Length: 318
Ligand SMILES: [Zn+2]
Image 1 (cartoon, rainbow, N blue to C red):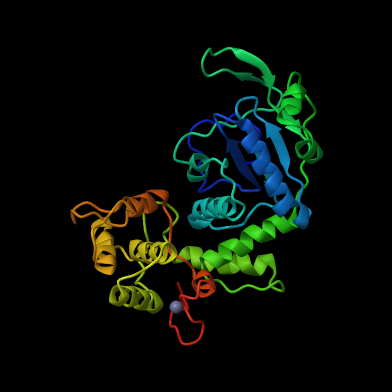
Image 2: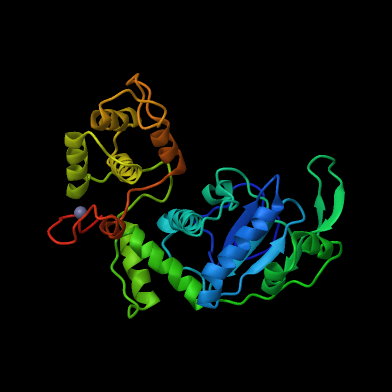
């Protein structure tokens, strides 16, 4: 499903799809120039340093599509594909501050329309072709031309770029997915070896879909964080994210999690969204996290945040 350029409407079966490319959809209904700036930023900060050449298309509507092609298809177990892909795209969106990267497509919660290159864009208002084609643009053009000049190119069909498959792009995604499952990895580990480790991780988890959560007991360092914050009557946004996701994965309900935050802050709720003054109504932050299908922080990130001290904490296996 991912490797052909068809208009794909409706839900893609990510669980069994062959993933040999990552789709990025950049959309902005008001100002398509913002999409261009995001793509340039991503090329400058991610693609260029890694010698990755993406395929880029102006959709003819109000956005761009971009593909990064892997050297070979990802050999992940079906049970982890969807989650790995979603979390990786969310991570890239956050890390490179890609405001126009379409979250609906990331979550696959609504239909995503892929456009066929060199077909004319159909206006959603009039159902008529607008005369603007879905065209490929090169990296050089994206970096150099204005949005007006790029639309100028879209008045007629253009040649379709060939895929430049990247080992580095594949490796980045494999490394990221190992982090999700707390699989230790170094540059000297082969991709084949890491696939094996991921296969093991996939076989004992049923966290492939957003609806099914694999219940995990909260880790000691997070329990200490909660107790500590309750004692101090203080916390911060990062701590709150860590706590909420830990408790979500521990099978707690939204109101139970909100209760923890009301215990920490012990003051009127305000509109921060972590809890409400009416304890039967959960905080909207928690409701949103569940809806997004987010999962708890892995050990590496907890260590980077200084929440888990690498020595002596028993949170080895997540
Ligand atoms: Zn820990």
